Length: 269
Image 1 (cartoon, rainbow, N blue to C red):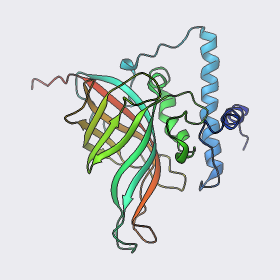
Image 2: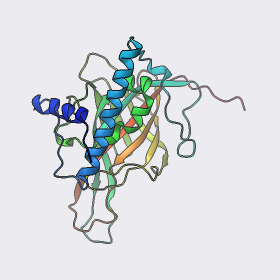
Image 3: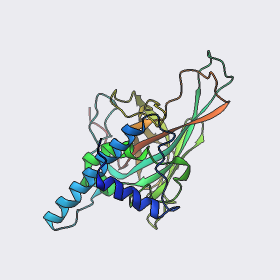
Image 4: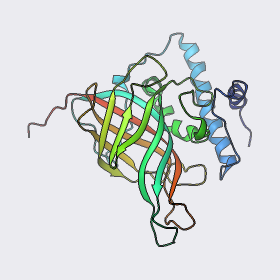
């Protein structure tokens, strides 16, 4: 397998700027060859688009309100009528779990998640085909170093953080990013869930992708954010049982989050 020169130069950029950029670490990956191929394909796509942009001779127009979320009516209910895309973020972090004991008859229990959110709104509005693969790329960079800094050799600023305020209450703080831009806060509860597509990428150790979600905001949301989608998930799923696991453990994941805002238009029917 031939690794593209574009990928090598991109990774070298991250290495020379250390410790500013998270590390690309193969030693903990179940299939390092597949990881390299994924990254090579991703950065080759970026190189192609950069070349095409030079030919066009004008900068892209980043209008997030016109971004098209991948249609998946068979997976999740669509956004409510009247809402428009407000912000799109790449989430990179961990899904958290607990085990009452380490027996092979005990099932891990989900205990929320923690993630850094990167602003990919412009990417989503200009190159939606790249957005569907961006989480596949992000999973291959060390989660331990992804904290308020660029992700690998990418220029995306941090738009905020994601964690849980209480059981079942996901919270997205988009007001504490690495720039002066503020995109609001969104406490949410689950509205719908769907199993990730069979072709979804696995995590560094072969973990299956966590479900796709539709979330509704609750009291405390700002900037008219009404709904949040978690799609394009990679990794994050717990083992089937708690055998050999500690009482608390984490599983790395990546996902794309779409934030929708506006006034919901009720159907007349």
